[in-house]
Length: 499
Ligand code: ADP
Image: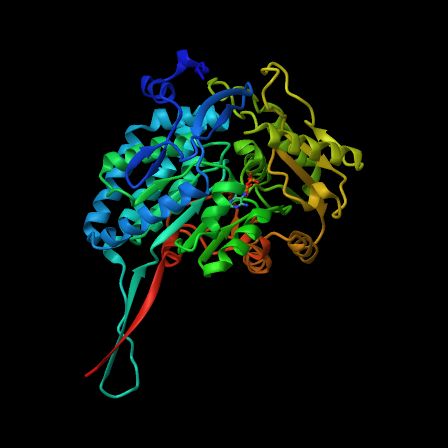
């Protein structure tokens, strides 16, 4: 099939060359290859809904071949010295940085996000993640234990698990690769990467660069394909030692079940319905601007989106007015357009899901403060929605309880610390929370009370490779980033020596 390249006149020559060669293949044992069945699938450009690229689709038999190749590679990779691993990770970071423009353009075309966001957030954060973990291989250490048995020496070794399956979502396709692969590789594992079928392309360019960087054949495998086929086969495979997953709570549950066969390790970073709490003593203008950014950034397609805004009654009107003004100023449009602040949603299926929730909110009696309609001046067939704010909801409504994963904010007033802590925690999720107050003891008290893996005080959406991120409750378990993530890609061996 010949596909036209959308927005071609605006693209870097490297991006055009990348998109001109199709279908995009799988990387198995260091070789680019079609799937055994010859099957392919199509990825779509969300601002128009038009086909963007054809991609080879891995089936269970490709997973089998890939696991054998990765296991063979692990025997060699584990002998590579820590210093060599560091050099490879650094080289890869440099190459990603050199291809920043192509990566940002590919993310815009495949995912929909504004080019400026890819250049400012997705690509640099990916580079930083690889640089941070490049520093770790030479610092992985065991301990000598103070045992009380006479004439015995006991020490620990930290060893890689073996073959890790990384199953990632479509909201930050490139960054999510770095969250899983950087620590897994630093710890000395081989990785089989299964990107989301909605956004398979940046992973292809990424894997081309891993070959260029000089990673040995089979250390990094790319299996594009569908979740229920490729992802499920990987999660169930007895030759895989761990699945590192980011995605929905529903799929997280399926992965845990599939992983039970060989008791492979699982770490799951799942959904959220994060509370963003603003007290009346806060710097309310700054807080309102963060509140808007936290839900409308990336078109609300962030697991940590501050989707439930709680504002203390005295400043409720002022804060909601300010967040509404921010929302109205957001220019919704095509990601390749420099004037765009918010792009389309990533897929038709997701667009239907988000617009369904908007209807549910409206039909359920919530007040639409702003949004809840199609924006003007955008391509007819694109997956666009406007930033939406609902008020006058009750805590049992679906829009308040369930993750929408779109630019839809629920604003609600509260009176006391105890009340807001109880309501903020009244959710199945526990990924993140924000608190805005100048009262230091109240801030720390709430940081302790909130049941979530991250609490941001007087800020929001702060990420750093050194700081662990992950969930409480049904937002999952295990952590991305920091040494905490690295630990999850290693076994601890206790060695006893009779003296
Ligand atoms: P979202 O709801 O954000 O689309 P999903 O949880 O459906 O997120 O998808 C996240 C990742 O999980 C994707 O790579 C997808 O292909 C994969 N996936 C979906 N279903 C399964 C499954 N049954 N087993 C393994 N992986 C799956």
